[in-house]
Length: 554
Image (cartoon, rainbow, N blue to C red; front, side, top):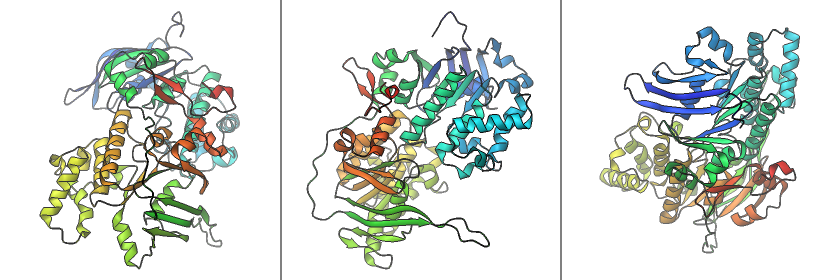
């Protein structure tokens, strides 16, 4: 950072309040971003980091009012700009990459039209010139068929590809400042690394400054020169990344850093003669799109998968998007019908017409990635948690109520939550309810599909600690599906690595993380850095595995 150069973005004493209640959501916030610099804003959900960043573009919601402070971009007061000046600034000078590209890309418009919009509005170019620029940018962001992408819709691409397209649409205009709001939260390790490296490459080429909003402290430490820490609307600490990480001054910063996942000592599980769940040669196929005169090509999602889960064991399944890990979990849970293979529970083969299958389904429960979409908004928390108990024989209403109260206490919420509805709870509380609902029947096998991916750092740590306590108390086995290698390193006894619907490597957690054999596993471990504690009370960046590229060593 060159202090002799005027800041590109200067936010001074910004205060924002909710109009009706008068509650302060951003309180006296000040920070600067200099040309070509990458600055990270970190904090929990509700800390005000996204609202402060959106205020830079004049995207303050109608219910929020400016109470005080200034935002100056390139010397101009953003708050004093006319609507016309704001439209001229947005896109051409300040661009924004949102957390979920599917909600920011128009699902009814072709990709080519969406990329052309900004160029047509802000650049004096003819149609052929705009098309050439768009194709060149799509090649730069790694799309294999740029020409075909122009006539495709957003839903035809994976999450990583959509984020690349979103980045392309923003960087086409070569903005001076890029606001990146959780740009890689929903992406797996390799795609996350690729998107971030691409973003850094494009911004360096155009000398674009970046304001990166994230709860991923490892990523912020890897890419940002300075860090701003926010808590409940206040900036509690800011400074150089290495100083914040190595010597955090504020208790909240230390709390964030201490909440990062860490490896625990490997557990010694008793040997069992029979796996709780055994899968053999599992095949899952999806029919392709059919036309009037052609039959759709069948897509095989799982190619003969075989796994065993021992009693009390936590088996983690990792892999990139589209690797088949969620399909594996859903097919084992009975939510997806396999095209072939066999599933055994306690050594007995299960079939939909047999008593064994009924027994298995009652003893197999699932925790979904997004608890809000898996909880019926019309039912109270007590009703939701009690629902799996309806099929328990000889259980009276009083018994069910007592069991619900017991399990709510176990997940740290208490009986007072029973009368509330899902929308009245925070994301972490909803995930606790999803876990409570899964364990209320005392199942012997739980499938957890990305159970903490949408949570911020401290809430994630709380939910993982809770999950570990419940697993030890009740002894259920678990298939833990995740793309977060830090989380897997903390919770797993054994790790299965999947790629393109196949298992490429499996083994004890320490063997997989310390001595991976398959190239894809090595690539996964080299993709995202971790943070480890230092004797001084801070953390330092480390790589689980270095790639041949020296730039990945850190």
